[in-house]
Image 1: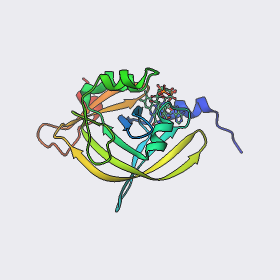
Image 2: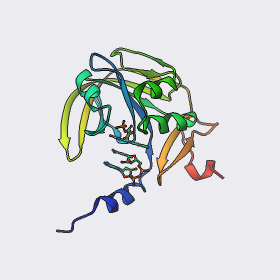
Image 3: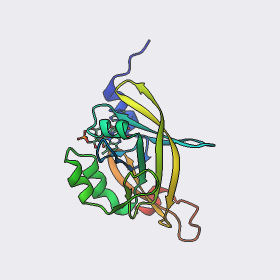
Length: 177
Ligand SMILES: NC(=O)C1=CN([C@@H]2O[C@H](COP(=O)(O)OP(=O)(O)OC[C@H]3O[C@@H](n4cnc5c(N)ncnc54)[C@H](O)[C@@H]3O)[C@@H](O)[C@H]2O)C=CC1
Ligand SMILES: Cc1cc2nc3c(=O)[nH]c(=O)nc-3n(C[C@H](O)[C@H](O)[C@H](O)COP(=O)(O)O)c2cc1C
C-alpha cells in the first residue's frame, strides 16, 4: 500500500479552492471562533452541514462544550478578519475586529457576512487530528452580497457573481484580470 505523506497531501489539497468561513460559538464554555475552509453541506432534509475542527484548536473546548456554532460565510471585505481568526491571537482581539449579533443559539453572527448558518451540533466523529461536527441548522441569515472569499493555492481570492444574473458566478480568473 502506498503511504501518502502529510506534506504531499497538503500540497494537493492546496489545489482545492474553498469558501472561507468564520465559525463561532458562545455559551457557558466561553466565546471562541476560528477560520475554517473545511465546511460543507451534508443534506437539506433536515438542513445539516459539517465542519472539521482540529482538536488542538483553541476553540475546541468551547465549541464542544457549548454544543452550538454559527458558520459565517465570508465576503471580499473579510480577508483581514479571516487572517485574524486563523492566527494565534486571543478571542477578544479576534471578535473586537468585527460587529456581531445573534440568531437562535447565541453563537456570534457576523454583521456583514454573505450568509450565516446558526447550528446545534448533533453528532461528532473523531477522525485523525480532527473532530467532524455534524450540525443541525436552526436559523439562517442571507445577504444580497454577490461575492465570496475563496482560499486557493494558499492565497485569498474573490469570486463575484455576474452583474446581469446574481445567481450565476463567473469564473475566478475572469474577474481578476
Ligand atoms: N482543515 C484544516 O484544519 C485546515 C487548516 N489550515 C491551517 O491553516 C494554516 C495555513 O494553511 P495553508 O496556507 O493552506 O497551508 P498548508 O500547507 O498548511 O495547507 C494546505 C491545505 O491542506 C489542507 N490542510 C492543512 N492543514 C490541514 C490539517 N491539519 N488537516 C486537514 N487538512 C489540512 C487544507 O486544505 C489546506 O488549504 C496551516 O496551519 C493549516 O494547518 C488550513 C486549511 C484547512
Ligand atoms: C484559510 C484557513 C482555513 C482554515 N480552515 C480550518 C478548518 O477548516 N478547520 C480547522 O480546525 N482549522 C482551520 N484553520 C486553522 C484555524 O483557523 C487556526 O488554526 C486557528 O484559528 C488558530 O489557531 P488557535 O485558535 O488554536 O490559536 C484554517 C486556517 C486558515 C487560514
